[in-house]
Length: 258
Ligand SMILES: C[S@@+](CC[C@H](N)C(=O)[O-])C[C@H]1O[C@@H](n2cnc3c(N)ncnc32)[C@H](O)[C@@H]1O
Image (cartoon, rainbow, N blue to C red):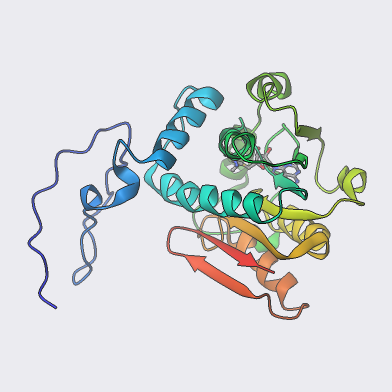
């Protein structure tokens, strides 16, 4: 099939597109985002993304990779809510609540009758272990600074999510408070804690409680800064029968359908 001619894309808005640090490798297609739905101003998922990042963190911390990951996350969450309206949702790693606010907005607009359980230390990332080391965070000093950048304010996040009465926030280091939801069954679980051990603990706890047909989303799967996030998922799934579906996404995430 003949290639469509590619119009010169308009100049990117600096708030939405991170400039490339280097030109794309020779032979790779360039990325013409103006041809792709998620970046249309009228696209409802993009509007949801923008509203939620505004509510949670005044629009800070936006980047194109996150836009793409959350474009998928939102659709998976919505479909899980439609399929299992009476089951619960969970999220491990909420930071200021951007993804939590997106998912909650979708649940609020659906016939969701479950609870949305959200776990975070609110003190940042846990310690790097051997599985988490990479050339991108080369020294203890850089690693510790980075860990603390992910601290957030429990009261502020509670206020951001106050209008969603089905949300339950659990402050503490994973897995300390998981036993409070050990009797629940889940339609959807999102894991976004970056490091090997809490990712492993999260999948090991929630996977057996995920309904057949339920969905798990893994942020950071394949992100080279955090090799532990992928290894934890691979290590755990190697102990289980193959899920119904496991899909890697090209911008550092993956999801499965049990
Ligand atoms: C990348 S952020 C999550 C981003 C979030 N999904 C959003 O939409 O902005 C990672 C979060 O994981 C939390 N976290 C990392 N390790 C943890 C652990 N062992 N226990 C609890 N929370 C942890 C951090 O506090 C941080 O809020």
